[in-house]
Length: 326
Image (cartoon, rainbow, N blue to C red; front, side, top):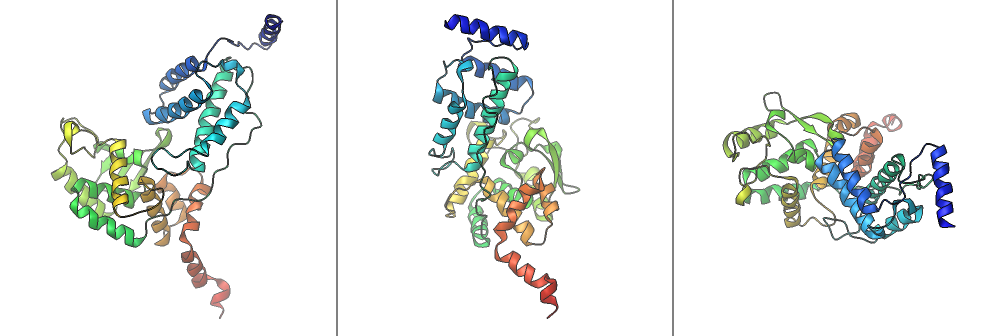
């Protein structure tokens, strides 16, 4: 009976010109997908993010599970379970943003399986993606920023310049870690960073940052190899003089913020939020902030407005047409 059903199903697929390979396991499918991401020239960071999330899901429902047997419940139950799991870098629960990213990765993988004929239907059609909270991590207060720079007096000049770079440009961690010398224009005060999806954008550098960057690259930066392209280099152990990689920068920033007693979820993203908040607080435009941060949608940038709190109320009181009539 089962064989007859399979024959009929394959006949239907043949009519629709869809090839379904009934014997593919999730383990094999994931290996194929990994090769596909490399062939598509995705960045190593993007591939790592995709594979990390998918491996957790596949392990959750079983690596030897037949792809053709997947259903919507396999995704729903996994998403529900993520709400009780801690984040990767903190002990707090996984954020709604992280959960939504995990879902998006699974959805893309499921679509890929369907397009290549391994999954008979798009099992997530009609399923509403997890909602993302508009709440952003709190930026550093002026007092915390002051304490941070006091602490940096006991750290290397490189660490000081890295923190300055985050606070002056609002770049993402991976953008700073991947910054190369040929994309640094200290004469005109610009840096070209490579963001999500390999998109490049130019960010302005303030005079203080330009001054300290010039001192770092001309005095403190000592590459192990003369062709080392990355701006910020490791200063310890066997990697001394080599690229100061993503994980190293992340740990350094986390350690600094912990030392000045920043509570809750924090990291390089906290410095990005601090830059955005101070940019608006000091009179910068929302559109200007969008361009500097590399947001494609102004709605993403608008989330920072609620962090200004009483600043917005005071500004409104100052410029309100009705109040000016008094």
